[in-house]
Length: 426
Ligand code: NAD
Image 1 (cartoon, helix red, strand yellow):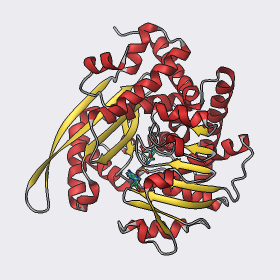
Image 2 (spheres, rainbow, N blue to C red; image 1 turned 135 degrees about the horizontal axis):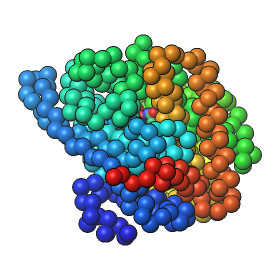
Image 3 (cartoon, rainbow, N blue to C red; image 1 turned 90 degrees about the vertical axis):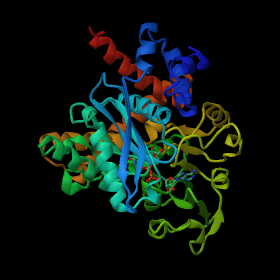
């Protein structure tokens, strides 16, 4: 179906990001020669919930926010996907992110489906109390749709372990049961998994190490630029620096910094915690986000938001390995440009899957009330991600479709097989 027809049929969740996710899916479906009876079913979200959230602000006024939860597909297991707090959150973005979660779970071979949620708000402009009230009201509003056997949220942009603890507490208060498995990414004292905080960044680094082997690049001394300095960007930069790489540039929504001799990643993180502009960090030059993306470096990690590398700037990208820490940072036009430039692309559903893999482990630990050592968690995650990386490379070599389509083909195929075996209800 053409994009214009899709838009006419599904105007509620149609958005540039959703269109991008559909284009990627359509290409994978075509290469897989997917059963036409399945195509419409598999790409359409199972459920979309839109909620309004009146919240008492500290100044005594009531402000109403808009929240979303989309369950894209549960053929392989309960929904799984983060909750985003950002001013640009809308139903289309959440639906696209939920779809990517479905393919990611399929690619990783874990028994979870795809979901996502979010609230349109700027968490930086809300006090701790306002954030807590908003989170509790949002949890109440989506509570008919969540639960360990239904849909299990996790952190994403603008949310963290504290947000997950509030969600868990609200859910437990409402149900009367101590249900740790309702969310992942919680603090360890609340049934959170060891290793979850750094899991996505660690997974990004595992995939970069594998890609580096393929192109004979040594991580020791390799130059790295990271766009987005939140959970994923910071952890990826920190772990790469630990392994001997030189992190020459990082940025956040306000801009970034550059030092050709390498930046002190942990000191920068401390500096950024006070919501300070990175540009004033001592011993580094100011750099814009666009300049960062165009830097000459060995490894570039977009770890912020969607739509960062587009037809307009893709030609300026000069890295050897392009590792998508973020979901959807690259438009389909840009993909083609990067591939033609011979850049080794590690697509989002493969690159940033460490988060969902360790979330899966957290869910399993919560269901058993039995907790694992961090070494075991990291070893199991590494095995799953490396296998997915090698499978993707093998398929890419066989079919010459590019790493993104190869990864999507593996993910979509597994979900399609699950749906075929389950059959059509009723
Ligand atoms: P976060 O909120 O911790 O950090 C986001 C960072 O991006 C912040 O530093 C913010 O200032 C920066 N940013 C925002 N807009 C920007 C812009 N236009 N240019 C440059 N920087 C900008 O979020 P996160 O959890 O690190 O998530 C980042 C990305 O990784 C998202 O795409 C998310 O969906 C994806 N992801 C996150 C996880 C996870 O476990 N947290 C897992 C998989 C994928």
